Image (cartoon, rainbow, N blue to C red; front, side, top):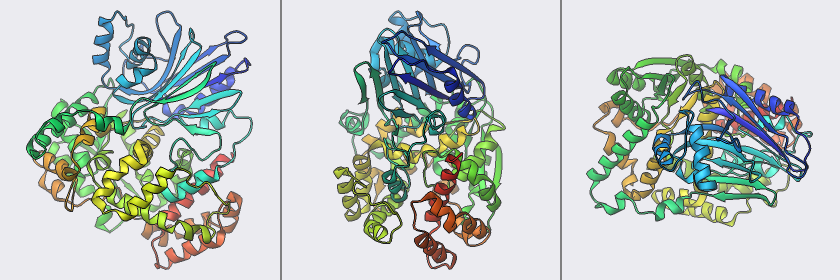
Length: 590
């Protein structure tokens, strides 16, 4: 994993190398092992190009530096991510006459582009965001992985395109601070994240998952190279099998998980796994222990509370003992919220309202002391019917409350175009009316793959804050294709969520792990906000701080706080979201 950035000037103005250096320094936490710059001065009428790269070396430590060129140096690339099927692609490219000088997956992208042009992105199984400059065609080509695990943001006007792995790198080199997009702010408060391509800022966008951006003298074009509808239309092995044969589907599922985990164990540096004690992370560790010669290094986080609901450490220890891992733990305390909120906000320049960012940040720091790569269990719930019911119920509830929130003046600007997408509105209506098993089916068709990628953006941001690569085997291309082909009744069978997934893994996990109820990554913030963190909350969300932000009604926020502190309502998630924005706005004033 790395950090990438670049500037393309349309007016033939020379690009100051210092600007790229500033951007790279801002991304230094993503790539502490090295850096590189490419500047193509070009000639009048052909524009200017600058690319920057910060490296976190994982594979081919000696010769994998970037920017990297093809043989005649007509194509140059900066790349963040991992291509898991690079050995398979390399064999095919060698047969077609391509020659390689490194063992890195970066060079695979260069040669695959030479072979297939922009459609090369269809061939890659992995998590990636890369930018490639083709000097012969005077074309910039940017691509992002299917799910959108690896981030890519860009600013675009009639003079320049500026892109980077994080928004803060773009903000550093703009002559003027962009305005806050009030519509995006409203979406964040309702959906808990900002759907692509929008960001919190006007004129700064995130490239959609499974998309490519092509920029040349004809202008800018964005194309989608993969979609859920395309995946559903493809014939699959499951559809060709007897749909009533649960054993066949369970066996295929285990085989696919095994293949995904095995491919993601490729690394020239130490790796480990996040272990919560749930079935998702425990299954990952089960297959890692099967494939690795040494004990798996596992990392877990607990909370300083007497409420057993919030502590999963006992289950993590059960899994650790069962698979004989080299286990490490850390406890999150209320004071950590006070100390780390400004730091975390700095890494959430594309905000997501998820308290799990705190323990993820802390356990990532712990893991980085021992390894450079971790495998994580994100994605299984989204694809196999886990806690999505809760997410959809919450989403429908917020939508139904939308007029009330507007009337109460929580957001000052009048937003006539709050949600302009008719499909989006129709989908929310359908979600509030449908029975919950069918809501799961509607999720991917209504909100598309961006929702999954945005919801899962926290592992990348929090792990890369420490220079730690987080891999997600459940979001492997094969896993996604397979999961989308499984009949819905095998995912949610009556009131049994993740039915086929649990059936498949039941024989490889301890009984205590299989039988336990689903909890998610819950924090005791509701209690903490009323007790240990009450002072922190009230001091952070004062009338003056809210007026400085300029978008919130202090009286409405005050009512939310009083209701929560008195125990009349659990407004902890809304409070967390407001704290995130408050510290994010403060950070962006610097």
